[in-house]
Image (cartoon, rainbow, N blue to C red; front, side):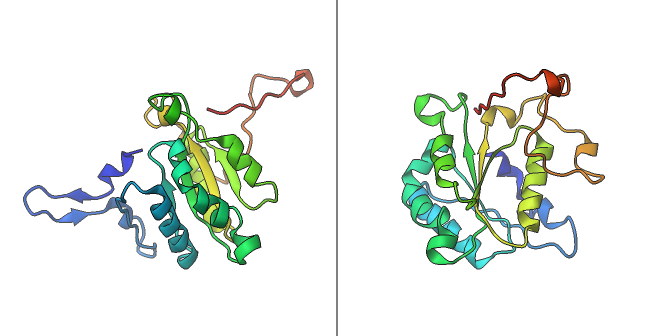
Length: 201
C-alpha cells in the first residue's frame, strides 16, 4: 500500500512528469495510475467496468486495508464473483487486499479469506496469497496470458512489502520459471509428511 507514490516522478523545477513504467518497451500498453476517493463501493464498481472494457489491460484495485472490501461487498457478490455465470461477461479484475496482523488493529487485520474461498467454488475466480516477489510477478503475468479473463483476489500481507528477507533472486523471474501454486519446504522429505496445514496471514 502506498508504494505507488513514485509511479510518477515530477521534476522539481520544470514540473515535467516522467513515468518509468511507460518506458519499458516501445510496444507496451500505456501505464496509468490513479488516486481514487475512499468509496470502495463506487471505486470497485468503476474498476470492474474498466476491466470489462479493457480486457487486455491489467486493472488492479488495491484496498488500503483488506476489510475495506466490506464496503464493496455488493459489487463483489453481484458482479465480480459471478460475472461469467450471471452476466455472461469475462472480467480480469485484480483485487489486492492487505491481510495480516500488521493492519493497525482487529478491524484492519483480516481481509476475510474465508469469504472469498466460499465464493470461488466453481473456478469462477482465483484466490491467492503470494509470499515472494517472484510469485507475485509470475501470478500477474500468468493472469494476463490466459486466453480468458477471470477475477483474481490477492491477499497481500503489508509486512512483506518492505521486509528485508522478502526477496527473490533474479533467476526466480527468468529462464522458464513460472507461478508455483504451492512452494514446498526444501528440507522436508515427502514420505515423512504426516500432516499438511494451510494457513494465511
